[in-house]
Length: 189
Image (cartoon, rainbow, N blue to C red; front, side, top):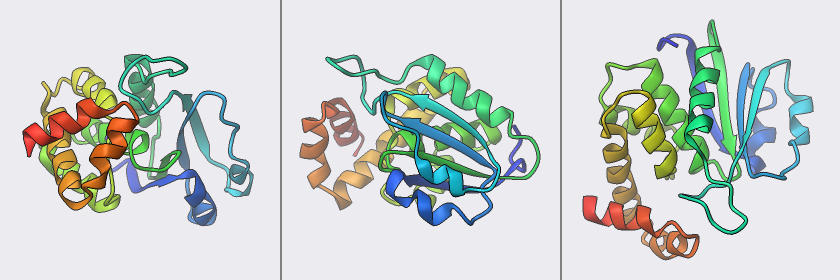
């Protein structure tokens, strides 16, 4: 995938999908919890190519949790590589904050291998201000793209920023079993 293949990017949550039905979306990457039904709204979208992956927004295995795995991130990158031609890519998860932003960051990094990780994260943050990319997914993307941890480092800095503007996230994320991200962000900040 080269930077000019995807000309427009949208990242959102399930409740925002209806607002994008008439925006000319050509490619959709759906990141859903296992067992979540396919969103009916896609019946209102024009013809588009869509890939759905199913895993929870978590950092590792747990009771009733299916974490994102290396193969999931590889599938995201394969989807990006197959877009071909000018496209409007919509990436969504439940809230449009973590899995979807991690996926889009991986796609940005794949599309522009010469760009610095900080610049890619800044681009993502400008597109989706409350972004909190899933650290597990970013770790896999770092490895698959040969980025030597630079994406993870830049995401930790974004997480640290988000904690300064949204301090309530620390307790919320700890309660969701994502304290490792909070701890890493606090060390980075």
